[in-house]
Amino acid sequence: MGGQAQVVTFALDWFLAHDEPIGEVIVLHLSPDDPRVSKALQQLEAEFPGDYYAWGQCPVRFRPLPVCDAEGPLLDIRGEAAAEAVWQAVYGLVADLKRQGTTLHVCLAGGRRILGLMAMSAAMLHFDHQDRLWHLYTSDELRRRAFEGAVMHADPEDDVRLIQVPIAPLGAYFPGLQALVRPAVGASGQIIGERVQAMDEVERGHCHAVYERLTPRPRQVLRALAEGLAPQEVAEQLTISLKTVDAHKTTILAECRNEWMLDSDQRLNYHFLQDKFGLYFQDTA
Image 1: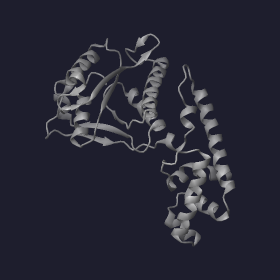
Image 2: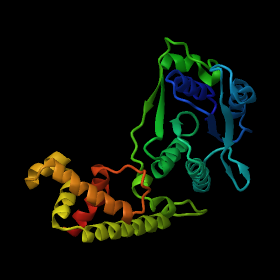
Image 3: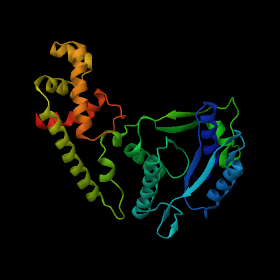
Image 4: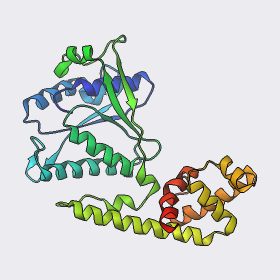
C-alpha cells in the first residue's frame, strides 16, 4: 500500500461480499514517516477498531507491516540494497504464513510496483493450490472519487472487482526450490543463477531415478504425458485403453511422490508430469 488506503477496504469488501472468510489483513507498506503513508495507515486503523471490521461487522485483525532494512523502515526503494530488503521482507512474510498453514489471498494493488513484483515471485515459490493472487480493478471514475481515501467503501453500483491472476505454484511442484532461492543479504544475480543451475541438476536426478525404476510400458506413458498429451491422447497413440493409461499414471505418480518426498495429501496429476519431465526428455533426446 502507498497513499491509497481504499485499495485495502475495497478488496476486503469484495471478499466478504463473495462469502470468503478473512481473518487477518496484512498491509505491506513503506515508512510511516511518509505523510501519505501515515495518513493511509490512520484511515485504515479507524476501519478496524479493536481488530473488528466495522463496515463488514465481523472480527478481522489488521496488521500493518513496514518494509525495513538494517536502519529501519524504508522511505523508498531506490537501489539494489533496498530491493533486497523488500525481497527478504516479502519472502519471509509469505514463507512464515505458509508454515502456519494459512490460506493466502494476495492483492497486488497500491504502493510501489516492485512490491507487487516481489509478492508475485514469493507467491510462485510458496503458494499451494488453495492460495490466490488478485488484481484489484476499479473504474477510472471511482479512482478519481476515491483518491487517497476520500471514499473507503464502494457503492453497489460502482465497478469494483478482484480479478484472479493465474500463477504456477512452482514451490508445490519443486519442493527443493524454496530452499535454493531463500534470500540472503547481498545475493547477486550470479549466486541466484548458480542456485537455479544446481536446482536443475537435482531435478534431472530425480527424473532419472523415477524413469529407471519404471518398466517399459510405464516409461512410454510417462514420455507421452511429458510431451503434453492428455491421457486419452496417450491411449490412442499407444493403442491401449484409457483405464490402462490411468493405471500406469498411478504407478508413475507413486514413484514421483516417493522420489520427491511429497506429502500423501498433496494432489498430483498428469500436469505434474509435464512440468517435471518435459525438459528432462528434451535434454536426454
